[in-house]
Length: 229
Ligand SMILES: *[C@@H]1O[C@H](CO)[C@@H](O)[C@H](O)[C@H]1NC(C)=O
Image (cartoon, rainbow, N blue to C red):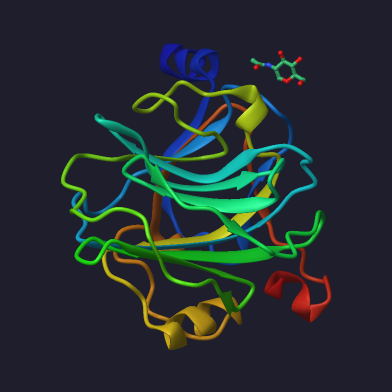
């Protein structure tokens, strides 16, 4: 009983491994506290692919995916810069800007980011459309990572800014320690068969909810294409 009370006081609802197929995290309000911690199966990466589907009506900056290390707050980040209308992947505190996307409010967006530490090239895919490939930074990620949904980490595991928090729903988060082929990315985008993430796998997700974040069923009766951007 005391333990339950303590968990309620700390705002911690769950810490567990779950199959979240057909489910989503709902982030119902702005805050500098509510988030989901994701525990990765691996901690050093020579290459990375991160994929997620999300929907929001925020008309301000927000982070969709935030992974930090002790020396790089923006270890691996998917960030929407609203002023510039750009998706900005960050790797080890380096950043590139990608504009020209139809990042509509109230529509689901499937976004994948790939990065190869050998040649330092990053690429994003938005609703099936690949960006150009740009140099961001080379050199592997070798430190322990803290991965968060719902907030942007400005310190290792914290430093949340209410004005960069995510409000909306996120589903189908996967992360790999290699660059996924274009065919596998297209299969992810169109909800076909793809190799599940070997770092983060939505079907065996090891996570912990802090504050007001809900696990809900994805609506069963949206138009079939709603999750396809
Ligand atoms: C968040 O943005 C609002 C509106 O622009 C501003 O008034 C407020 O000071 C900001 N809060 C923080 C913590 O930056």
